[in-house]
Image (cartoon, rainbow, N blue to C red; front, side, top):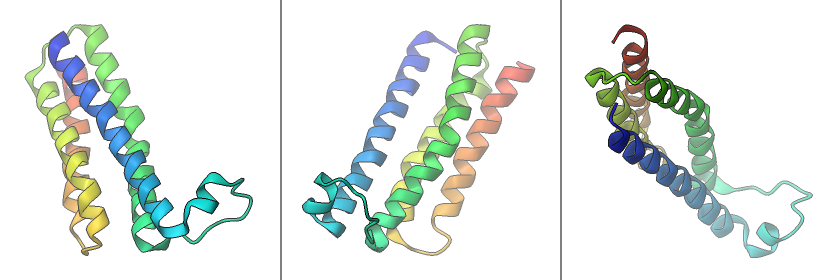
Length: 132
């Protein structure tokens, strides 16, 4: 994997983290108000459906983040130039980009294909580490 692609993929990943956190933060603030978000948060707030979806999407994204980062490191340290791994990183990021709006839409069965796409990307990256 070229250093240029790895840098681009990791920068895209970091941007995606910021988008997820920002979306959740803004939707939560819109649902519960500024007093709760700047307060001590000693009592749970009812986030509402949209902020709740954003929180679950963020949590789901963060569940796969360590695998993506570990695979990127493994590919970098191994110096492997596996095209399947580059494809996998691209597929993962593309699937995760589409996952957030799909989840926020609330439409049944819409987010699952994007989750599967991102998961397939991780499998392709793993194949690049193990078999290339």
